[in-house]
Image 1 (tube, rainbow, N blue to C red):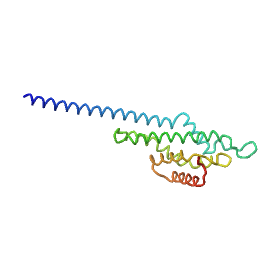
Image 2 (tube, rainbow, N blue to C red; image 1 turned 90 degrees about the vertical axis):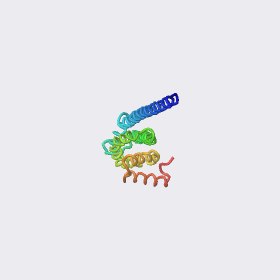
Image 3 (cartoon, one colour; image 1 turned 135 degrees about the vertical axis):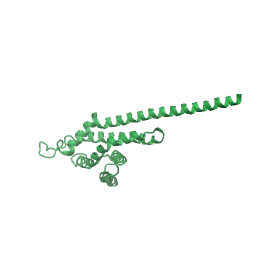
Image 4 (cartoon, rainbow, N blue to C red; image 1 turned 120 degrees about the horizontal axis):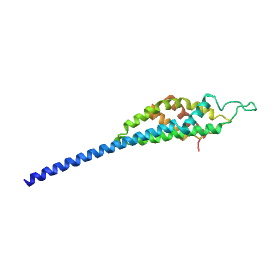
Length: 194
């Protein structure tokens, strides 16, 4: 009778331990999911508000020619605003780098923390931003590299990260291929490298 009772107690103890482990893991996964969605929210907020929103505005005006392109007092093209455009250019590139780092952090955790749904949510939020900026980036960059502005623009690393992000989220496209070709060509010529 004692052996039978000991066996029942052992089985019940194992069942309770397994059940507790299951609930601990489930609770941890819930915490990981919450943390993942908070990171997604923070990354999206970084892209759409504050200094990054101002940078996007500056670059859009620069690209469309509504600001920063008028002739100067002497009738020659004015380079005024170059510093503001350059700061906006790198502010947006660095924001995309932060998003890439955050996204890669989430994707590397997918196997054990179930961050896949958060990554998909982030990708859904980012796709149109990345598609539009990949379409626009070459023209912004070309105008910024004008001889009277920043002909030796040192952006290869950050621009490569932007291309990585676009391709990881929205897939490869002709715009990132062109940007990568420009980076490669300039690197071979010793332009834009530090």
